[in-house]
Image (cartoon, rainbow, N blue to C red):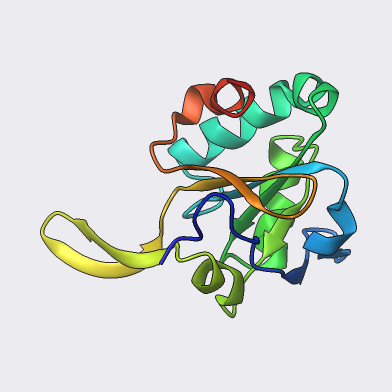
Length: 149
């Protein structure tokens, strides 16, 4: 189940693409855009990451820290971040603890085949660590505008 607006965001800690330990509690007093994406270096995920990269200044001015999460490895995240000069942390969730805590590890279907995967959802977490908004219909090319809107 997805955490509902108004409820506390599930706490987590994970390393990013550089091996830095990132904890949700470290961002108290700031908004966090915690975005989940299926796979590094795929077309939709790249469009989304580059849109967030390109609007980092506006997001920062609005007090929003962007954190990306997928189940890819640290090495995969590192290559993705370097290739596209991403300017925010990509959290490694190979053990699926974060995707499961946020309810985004769900059954998906492609070409009639069912499989488990990460849903492209974003959680805007307020300064007190509560879910402010959940975006389930992510516009990969205009995601920053969705967050700022």
